[in-house]
Image (cartoon, rainbow, N blue to C red; front, side, top):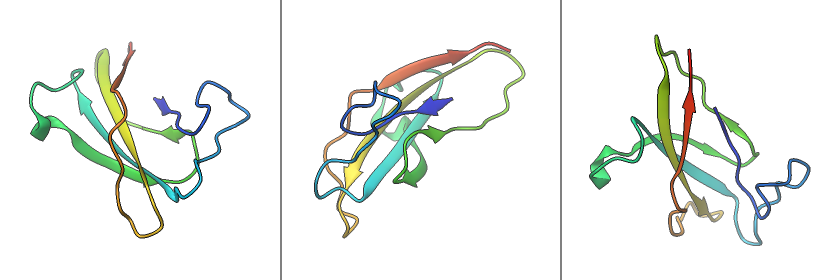
Length: 89
């Protein structure tokens, strides 16, 4: 799956980070949005959108993702709203 982030994630040609951001931290959960905060798992720190999440699944898989900007010191901002996607086998 591709996780797009930036000031205009809907525009494939413009994935700029907001001023002061050095990148994002990306968390995900297999099975949709988890019921508890501890259900989220770290996937990556990235500075170039899109992030490509590669996984193997024997059947259809539904993943939820959320990202938060980080500054150059690694300090994290607030989480984005979760986004959910399904891949069929």
